[in-house]
Length: 376
Image (cartoon, rainbow, N blue to C red; front, side, top):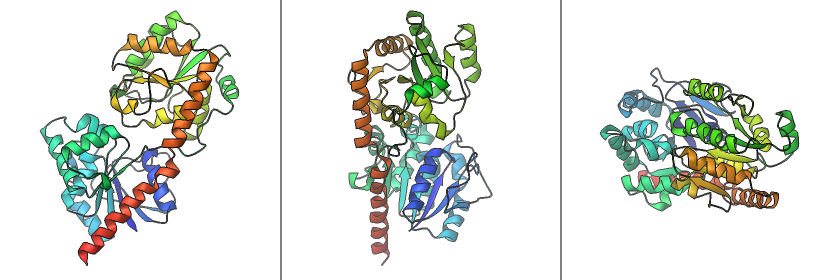
């Protein structure tokens, strides 16, 4: 099957899909509307890059993406794919919908449906156009599925849903003592880890305020604050002004191969994100056996049950987050061990990337077969 995979970024998330599609023997072409490609790594082996003369930034409005339509149609004419897989919804999904190509699978990136779909009239129109034209839909959680089906009556049998999950064995609680020693964490320190971008959506300021409040009551606490972003100046200013340089570790962006070691060095995971689909970093933390303190939003409640395998706090509520951080840090070892086993089991059962991915391929095959019958 020849698949045109159309997206607006060259992230590791897209890499996972491209690698998996080629591993199953498909002829895969990758078109990046931003023309940025994979900054740190080349395309996965076997994937062909498709170039366009025009490009747009990934944060542009749908109308700017619509300007790519004519050239996108030329790409379709040249490649003659069997199926187009396009997302996010209001950008690449929208362009693919305007082209009139079928079969089309539109993929949600979570925030496109949970944050941007109802931003204004233009974004609502683009959302509706993309989803109503879609022959199939891919999403990572029940929350996104529900929002999408309010915009278009997509039958459940034409939806593939699974988290953009964890490769079996890639995250586990192996060698935590070695990882902690390498980072200079003392045996009695209780370290929280956050791997979210320093962007407004992820409320890094709320996280820092919560950690500061909790640290004043328990000076064993440490924060491993991975990442970078537009809020970098505010983050560093807060750390300096509150004299947290010795207890908040900021290594910047960490290579994917190094990430498991950082999770193993931590005792718990924290995220104050305002909105999420199924968060891959949450799954990585759970696979490592960490309890989680996350925002009380529907997508997180699909994975976290209060007092069983983690804790939930309201969006933007630094004091409530601080209370939950202190609560986790006070748990006795036997309760932490029980949570660790529980979270590892949940991820193994529900978020195994290798086990879940074939459901997307079955959707592809069904749509292509139906299209062939209709053309015959």
